[in-house]
Length: 116
Ligand code: FES
Image 1: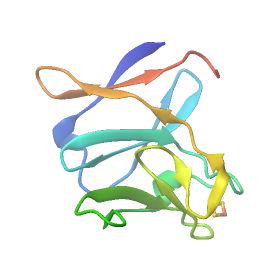
Image 2: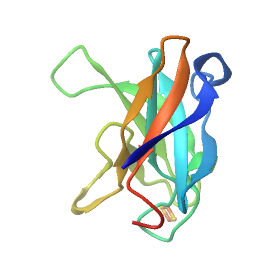
Image 3: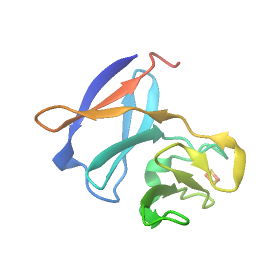
Image 4: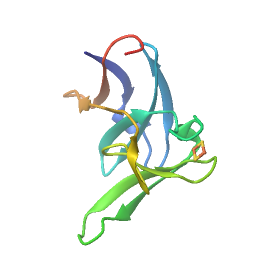
């Protein structure tokens, strides 16, 4: 596992997805509520790039919390940006990558190694 510095936090805009390629992993990187979030950039259905999808925060069921989702631009499947869960499916899950911020607000993403 290794962290890679990818973008400055100021270059990530609310609701905008960035595709980054790290060590053989295609990753969707975005920012919600000031926090960078990273998941695999491939829809589990037919592999469409999730960075082309719609990113939004929606109220969590039963709480006041806002939860981030990306909606696949291909056929509209909604995927959690927090845990990679897929709406309406207990079996599918998109890999999620840990992120962290440096003291000077650079975003770093952890990947497990080439193609792992
Ligand atoms: S490829 Fe994502 S819903 Fe079809």
